[in-house]
Image (cartoon, rainbow, N blue to C red; front, side, top):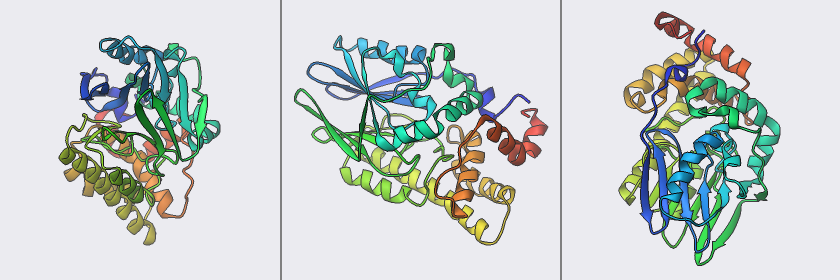
Length: 324
């Protein structure tokens, strides 16, 4: 078995480094995980560390192209390995995360690390440079404010959506938001650890901030209010469509495989062109089906569970193309 749909995705992506305002940048990579940069009076804050220290070096190189101020803070938008395991590359930086995110690292960080590296090898370039799990130095409850000289940075656990600990970084004066995977743009939301019931209210809370520019978790930087609205609306539509299919299927006693086939048939025409659609959907439907059947706390994805699920849902179609 050569693995998941993502295992054969080996193409390096083109990185964009967009200025969102003075000292504010979005580091985006054609649907791969994004990072954000906030330059304060005396230091720099990075949003999301990348997957490995080697990949973090690429972000640091971009930071160094615009400032020589030290990187003193790294904010984790959530616990997923692809976002956090590069943190050790930011030597001397303080790692900040929500209390819920830290709890999830305690509960499932190692399993998530093993699972993600197995699913998507290209996203862990230089994985041998990872020293282990990333542990935050500073943990906050719901909200904290960091003053970087005159620059106010609000760090907000906005609500359950992509994970239970989702955190956004909001600059109220500049009206710029780094949204993590609460919002995607032209990229399929990964929902394997999601809370579908809560996601709409979380997006409403995010929208209420009034961002005029936004860096999503995946996809290009959104540089005007129209694009911000489109990103939020697209994420809302995808997650609502998926959960509606799962709820209907669960209510009539359909199997996971039946719900998966229904979801793929209904959603591929509308969303199939989004980045990582084929990779995400088996995980997404599995979680949506669980939540529709009343399981509030997402089950832990292990490398073994990944393979079992993939075989059960994808074996028929994938076997024909040689993927499994």
